[in-house]
Image (tube, rainbow, N blue to C red; front, side, top):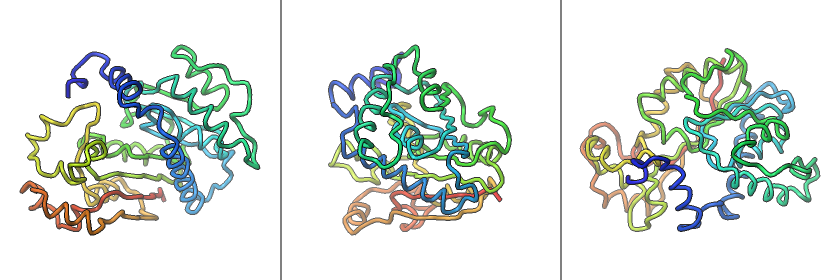
Length: 295
């Protein structure tokens, strides 16, 4: 909460994660997970899209984050025209440099061309956009509002959103989905991974993944910092937004609770707001993968 209220709080938070908690750069297992996540999204795109020539695919991602692991991996996998945006300028050059070094090593024994195995200048705050475009054909824009991208109508083949929607205010989600629908080509694919768990449980094992469902709206506003804003929407809510925007759902996979999750849910004091609006099954879904198509 304190960092959210401070000038350049994002930079202070980055300093804390890198030098105090040492959670940045991400550890090797998280990097491997991200690489596998890219493969998962790309596999779904190839399954449902008619345009399977990746060299001709136009890719758009919002919420690209600190280290750009996902778009850089997408570039390695063959997509050559990438547009990435963030609501704030969130990238950190040293993390991008680290990503490039580690992906170079990861793909060193790959049968395909290793796009990182070339003389890439060190990325700095001044040159990072130029380097990303010149060496990887990644166009990065920030700050840019995903509700109004300025991209051409029917210009994008593949949209990716990975662990981003849960951090977007409720009153913006409908407009973002409508904008995504507008810029997608007919037959275009949008792949979304959405996490419905209380993210504070990732840092504190003593609290449940359903912990934040105990608060009323007013209570949650007081303890929900902008640096890790969480909207608390459930899977059912996203389905309603998606259908309202005009998308067809091609694939829907829900991460359902295990027995220990259900036990922790039973012990959680769930606010009446959620008890009245949702069933237990709707409340306990932990995450999902949703693949959408514009017909």
